[in-house]
Image 1 (tube, rainbow over the protein chains, first blue to last red):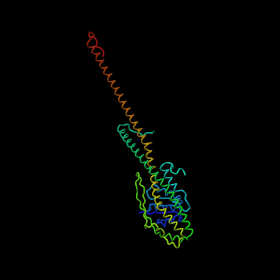
Image 2: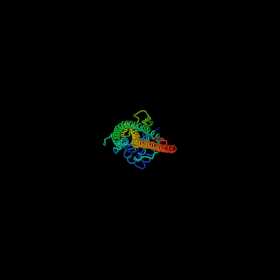
Image 3: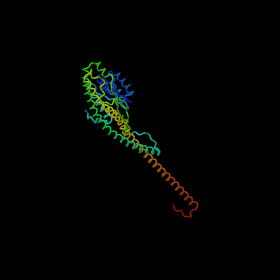
Image 4: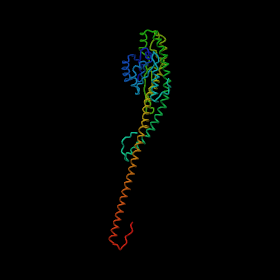
Length: 106
Length: 237
């Protein structure tokens, strides 16, 4: 049985607590990296992380790209959409195809 | 092409030929695998894009409500409201095999079956914006989980496609040409050896023939000398 975690600044994620997801408010990159690692090694299959925070701990996020679990998914925070989530999808396409054929450069 | 040192022997030739057959077969299979993976990946990634746009829009809308709710409420009240969630999401993670890539399949269960059981607070002290915010976020949740599944699958498949593509290219542009080159080299070397053996044999035969003629001539000459001048010398052969 797996659990779902949400990481990010408190304002962006506190609503997820009502849905029954576990929220971990962090803003400090070093602390976020530690937290992410302990979550990934724990019972969490899906970790949602705000785009702003994900950008700061990109190295940690990329470490779990190739493993089956957990899935680390960037979501927009209150500060707005930075386009990082879509960029990640684009990165997958580029990795697989060699060039971006889905988004046509926009 | 810089070719490796190979022994020009028949055994090596057979070995290389067998290897080439395997390499060509492997190349074909890997190419098929790559094409099929690519087809599935493209379908998946298109779905991923649509879903992500939808989820991002949903979360953004929910966030707007949350900001409003937070603005209208004291921090403590909000904390208390969110402190003990009545709902809980459990996730079951299975796996599905797509062309040798294990992609996750998520199935989620909520603690209470009632979809409206998401308000973990009494309505008396909280702003109504919070209700709307929680509701809009809960509407996004199924899509959010689907997104997690699809996006992870995309990442895993992208990695596998890259690996397969490299293997195909290595076989096509390095392994197979090298094997063909080596086979050609050995074949030519063996042919050359055979020709040189043949020539050597012909040469030896020539020498033996010459020797035989010489011997015969000497014998004839001796015979003529012994029989004396009265008898005519026999015809030279």
